[in-house]
Length: 138
Image 1 (cartoon, one colour):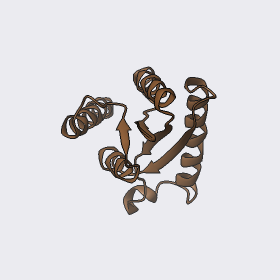
Image 2: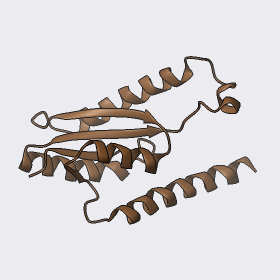
Image 3: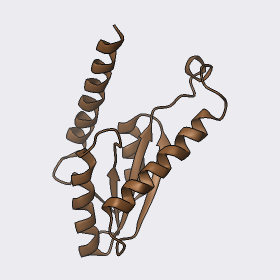
Image 4: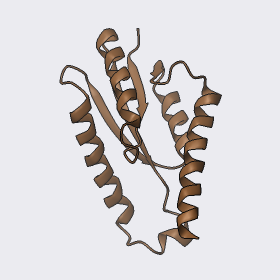
């Protein structure tokens, strides 16, 4: 039925992605699909932001997150399911949709939610995190 399943994973929210991966693994087992775990890092390549970090900071951060995502996958995905981990930079909603277009045909782990609701969900989560961070800074 499905050959590839994309699961966006936020490693900062414990328990949030666990259920999505569980559902994706179930679908993968029943349709012999490959699971793609995707983590999107915020971009730090703007000149104002990048000047505060060493030159190899972005690559090091990407490698660290990839190792964490691999450990997460090993913990939540059984050995009989084929999976790949992807770590990239950018805006979460745009990057997730970009990967979804690349992996056609695809089953999103949030299959009952249409694309607009999915984007709103990511935007609301991002705004809530930003607002909490902003309150702590003030």
